[in-house]
Length: 324
Image 1 (cartoon, rainbow, N blue to C red):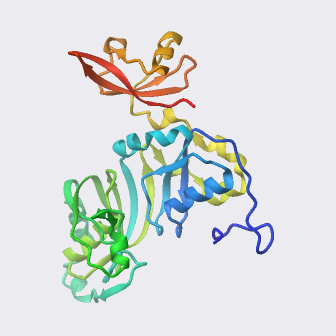
Image 2 (tube, helix red, strand yellow):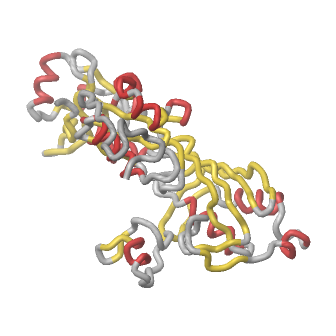
Image 3 (cartoon, one colour):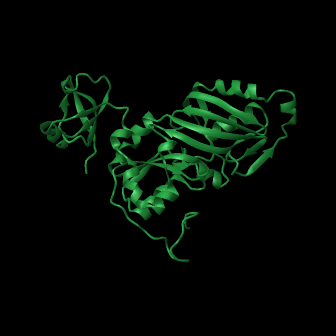
């Protein structure tokens, strides 16, 4: 299947491939709606020749916005990005509807008129605003039945698609901000800042339970995925049409790891790191954290290192080499 909007050179022929040299860094992609995150990665791999590629932080097909595509050596830092991973979403919720996927694209299970809730004041802008304010902090969240979370080795969505019952699962999430933008029944829009792994569909579903009328996610835009905002993202159509943009749109690994202290090594110490030697902790006496990004003598990303103890002494141990 050809990507929607992608023009083939001739009818019935595969789109032209314009392979680019393998990049090393983070491509901040503005994911279009209707494509899975994996499909976006597959297009870049096939059309632009990026053989070593992955992504950090999946977006549902209906969602748009920031998708961090990892190229080359940056595929080694997905764990660090997800761990640091605050995200900001702009979400639109539709009340009065319940579906099996907890979004508007699912099979409708029930529809509920909103007149009573609205007329009685049970559902209003101020009530919603207060409800969202109560989300801030640490909370438990139900995992959607249509999700990649696994049970007995199978993703829940695989069980759900077979018509099998999915077990109840929940998880701990952290929300630092939840603000109601507007409420225009049956729709409401809110902005939320949260940690990695938060299901916005689940938050929408929880509102439906709270107000006993059903609610689903109608639209979702990821505006920020640590450390990049949507205004730094490149449109997928634009990139596929102009592959020469890839190098200039690829962010450095160092910029993606800006939350870590970076330390530039001299040639002798660089050689030791490349050979897997641990370095004495005293090399970086001013670093309080447990991780550091080593740069080579030319200032390029060299390796990720973390504190390690051996024989009663502490060292910097190289965990990930970032050189080709």
